[in-house]
Length: 281
Image 1 (cartoon, rainbow, N blue to C red):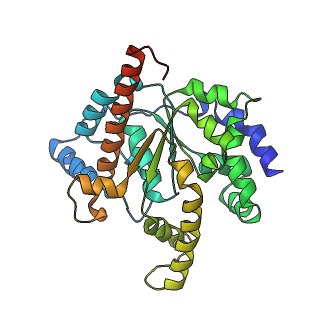
Image 2 (image 1 turned 135 degrees about the vertical axis):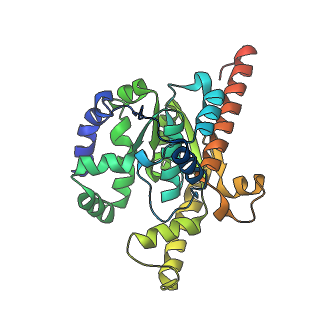
């Protein structure tokens, strides 16, 4: 029943009119305040303790400039973020959306609306996890509804997907309507997120942490090959290594977004080269 309800509501939730465009304030704050905010943004770690609201993840002027230079004609191409679910993944997706002036949507948030709130979504996940993973993506991409047509027509969209996006070949094929990006995060971070949602700390309950890690590792091993078919892969560990950081804790959200943009730029160049050679992309 929940799956049918989500499917029936897919068209309405992907109507462009339901997702207002981002608006930026025209009021110019004092220079000192701008400087303080820019410093704060640069220092936002990729793994904050809480998920940051979309409206608070305003990119720095430098990040906006660099993304504008790199992305260029890529605009209007939907972006699908996949990978192990955690606050870091969602925060990175939000900052990416704000940096390239895209809309941001989360498949889980949309399902909350479809099913009637967080409690209903939690009950659905606990009672039928497999059904939840199937409906998470298929409710928005069923070919016999207007969902896919409206989604692709929106174009400038970052959709943060759950594991349902890569559960089978059908869902993977649907992601080819845009560019898929795998955000590869350390499982320990995702496990800490899982414990926080239940009010537990890894330091005070090591057994729960071990159980969470075991569950995440099993899921990761099952899906990593499917994650790996994404157009772009951005690993937190690789970004830390490239920047010479001694710890992944030093990686910032802007570090991650800049690496994503760099990979998008490479993808654009590869497409241009293949088109110039007369080959299909």
